[in-house]
Length: 194
Image 1 (cartoon, rainbow, N blue to C red):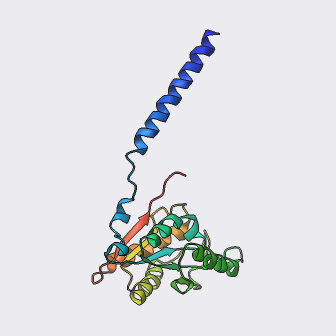
Image 2: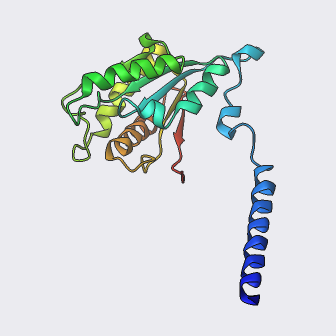
Image 3: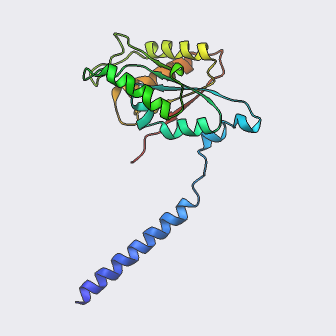
């Protein structure tokens, strides 16, 4: 009987200490992510940014970047999405294209500010690597066309580990490292535990 009481008290104590640590640490979490604080709101008289979200497949904008898109929209920034493939790995590319348009409408990104690439060397698939210089070329074209000054994409792991996400990251790195004349900020979504 004493063992059960000791076990129960230990469990409750551990739970209380854990809860206390969570509550203390959550009060130190910034209300605004550091990189977003650099993107000052145009509504407060500061410069409006032209942001390019560089993704690999339709649904990436929703699965990984929806909070960022909504935040940027709420601050008055102009958002463009460049999707490097139509996501046709399972033969549903046309369905997925419609899905990105519908999702982007909910996320307040106008249809005319979404570009989806359908290139033979940029097809969706774990076994279909993409050349960084090709991804970089499409990104550079959008950057120049729309006067983009901020690009957001995946981290080097690709957030979920998908090789196409990693290739998009490598493509943006190739563009930024080879770009000596433009002032472009590049940000990556860091992989984290869900």
